[in-house]
Image 1 (cartoon, rainbow, N blue to C red):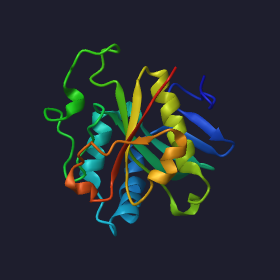
Image 2: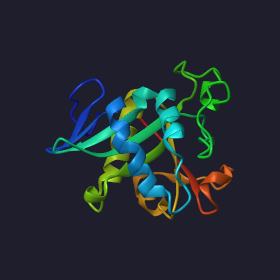
Image 3: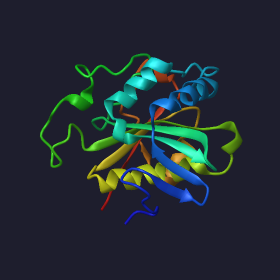
Length: 192
């Protein structure tokens, strides 16, 4: 059972003034500059086209966050086989995307793993513990959709934030160079 009440098929209230809803076209005017502010200095910014390509690959797994009716951040996720992740230096290409390789699996989807690719909250909402709550929302959503695992790449030392949620490091996974030397691939099983 989900910890969050369902508002629509794809939206949920996290608390009285925080709504998670599907990402829409008008959100990109906020998403792209927010991503640039969050990652450019550390060399991890993907740019607008790569971000949009992740959304095109899995629009039903990408969300905007609203706080009191105003844009408050975003969460991009997409199916990717366990042990794989998008390359920050390239846009998704359906022909090359490992998520599109239709291996047999119990759900009939390309992957039984949902990869939490990017999560950024606006500067005014930082420090409120929203990122772990949003990843919990995503895990609940993934579980309800039949995914077996959820993964992410922890950057800039953030693995200490995700470990208490159940994510475990997988140092054997080789990451694209675009993540830098200190990035850590992490995953957790989604038990029913």
